[in-house]
Image (cartoon, rainbow, N blue to C red; front, side):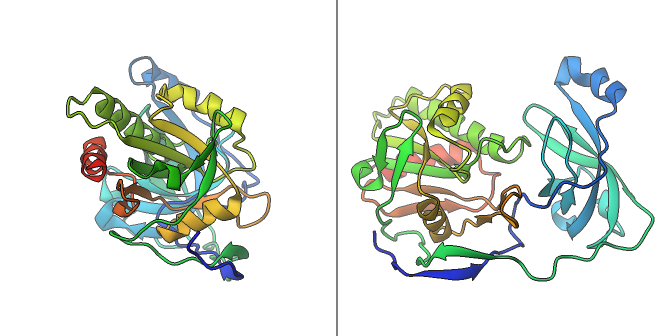
Length: 307
């Protein structure tokens, strides 16, 4: 592997583009059954009344980063970059504001609405981020050769990047306990759609592989990954869910700008997102730093990378 063997203590980055973090709050509010059930029959709509703390406001993008409490039966306490349908919902919000809001969850979408400030002083933001042991690696950009990494797939088989040369490789980073539809499930759905389109293609391109790499290898065992993968019905000749050594997963992620960590040992994972395409010669073809790309974009990049 072409990377430094030294290890260093590096400060975890808390301003991840999209992330999960923070401990469960002492008080929780669950969904209003009446409002949730009224629309569920036709849209599979669920709603939850949730408390949280504003971390960052982005009205121009109709987004806000919010550390919310645990939602019993649905989600751990997390810090998430959440969408609003109307930017006016974010008017007058500031970092540190304590808020109540309605979280709306559909099968393939989710957002927040009806945001209300709560009385009381603002919550102080964390001072210093925790320290974390990581490998020192060099950042990779388009055209750079990707070094060797070794994983284990959901069938218990060893997967080496070097053995995938000659094939286009698309990879992204997920974990099985990530429930909100616009985060890991959206990445999985985009990969599933790309997988199905590539398989159905009449172009003759068959030298391609998709890898979904867990960021939670301690929990996401081979057995759990196998069960999780069945939701997406992958052809394992072309799409594999993989785990590996945490240091290696951290290293390859950081080479593409991915950051993930636990603020405390038992906390949920905090992370941003990266999706990467590597060409048949083992060079970086494309890097996406959000979860909003279309499956057609991924298919197009995979087709180019396979040549």
